[in-house]
Image (cartoon, rainbow, N blue to C red; front, side, top):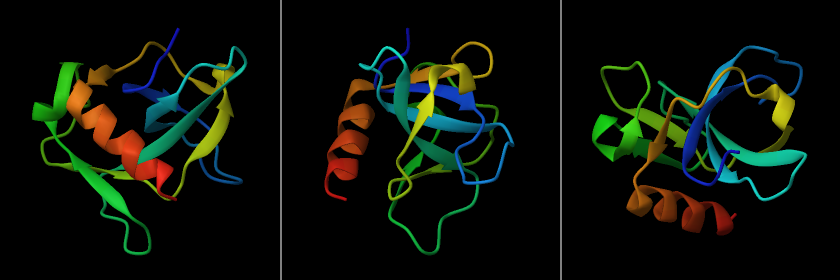
Amino acid sequence: MVQAGDVVLASGLFHGDRKVRPAVVISGEDPKTIIVCPVSSKQPSDAAWVTVDLHDFAEGGLDFFEESYVNLAHRCRIRRSAIVGKRKGRLSREMTLAICRSVSEF
């Protein structure tokens, strides 16, 4: 079961796009769906974001060499079946709290 702070790969994060992308779980309490924010290697120009890098992970991580950006304004609800494979990692408690607090402001 996924929980807030987990980083997963999922499809369907953007309308009409089935590409598999990384996302941070914001809420995993619902048994059928989860709420996530997508992660991108490109800084969003039209949305609020938080920077994450390998040091922000408590365990695991993403395959990137530079920082990535959590798109806070694009929170979405997806079916648990949209998760591809196992989770990629878990963000630190501090980073998870910072992201969840920021998302709740939108």
